[in-house]
Image (cartoon, rainbow, N blue to C red; front, side, top):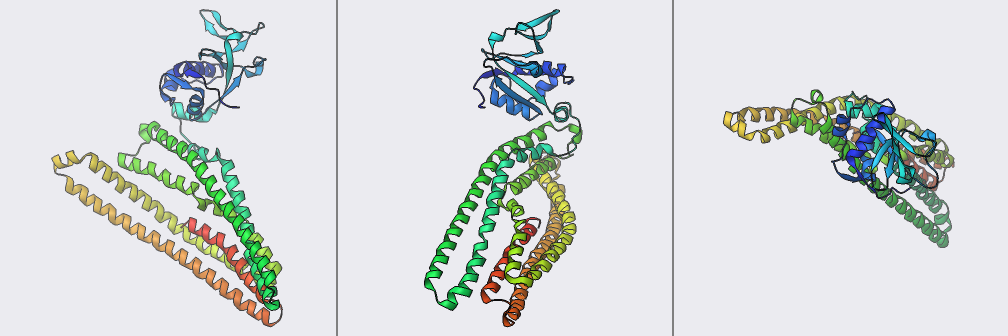
Length: 431
């Protein structure tokens, strides 16, 4: 249902929320909720109110009044008047009037004719208490919620990736038919039909990949707005004792979220959607080339194991590199901010020395990380080349014995390359 365009007063909404929470057993002080609620005082739209409340664990659902009044199980709720006023309602009497709180010993009555709808409240207690009262967090759900909220976009992108991968089988089948049927029979008409067909297939693949790129951009825009706001809120709202000692280091740590956000929103993440189709390529290769499929079955797991073993030292070095880079960025920010003090105390030389030390550490760890990354990339490329050589060599022997055709060998080499592609791309993601 579309959110109605009505104007509400932010402070009145806070008062109603506090009353609702008191009735439901949530001990949230009024001043703390008002201070932490991410909206300025004054008029606001219902949509902005819902978004701000959602960021601290409160879900607001507006129900437009039609012919029927709210049911007993909907209470307590927040009634919305025609003039934009809001008030928490605890129950409804026999005359259909909404009863709010006790005022001077008497119930506050809200005539049903005055309301245009009501807001149902649902609270995520753990997150609410974490955001308002500052209780410790047990995870980074505040960061991942933005991505899970757009799961449908990632699902559509994964489906498009899957269909594009299936269409890639056309290259192998096309090559096999040309080598085994077109060339021996010198059939130009068959060649034209096959070429037109495979061209159409690749056109469809282009459309699917373009659609996937659009989905990524569309979801990425929404995620970017949400995550940026949440990172800022986390940075501003973090408890003082949990802050790093140096402001510059803290700022650099906040910027690291951008790298993770860019990675999750990139097209590379859909490599994971390609991975299950590895089995399909191997099955088709087995149907065409028989025992030739053993080559990629042996090579691909071996490649995964080798690269997985190389991840352990890379993870350790990457953590050290990030820590040292954050410290260097922090030193730069603090030196610029305190340039006047440094000049007054003649302490610039100390900062220069510290800068050289941190730069040397960053360069050292960066060199080690790049060395492992380059070695992983090189061993992946070399292993794929050796796999191709093995398929051609074994396939040639099978052709000599009459167990395989030239077209089938070409098709198997293409399928083996397609099967190894998701693995090499996945390894590239983690290096």
